[in-house]
Image (tube, rainbow, N blue to C red; front, side, top):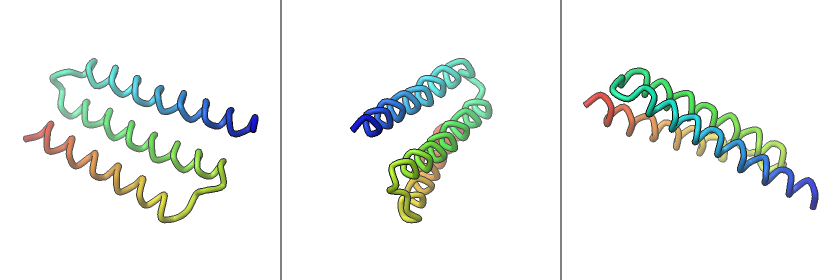
Length: 86
């Protein structure tokens, strides 16, 4: 049970760190669409990598799950590119 608690706390801390860092950088580069898009790319890649690490540590990583992370990340990038560059 201790390992699951540690893994959950670590998961929440890492996800909040990615979120807060991305929000801060996104607002810091306010008005600079290319830099904001780069921030989103870094956040999406960090989320995909952390998702793979987390599910690997909890022995639940599958190709389908990794593909889901990648496709959701691609959708986020597509939506932000439409919003920032239109």
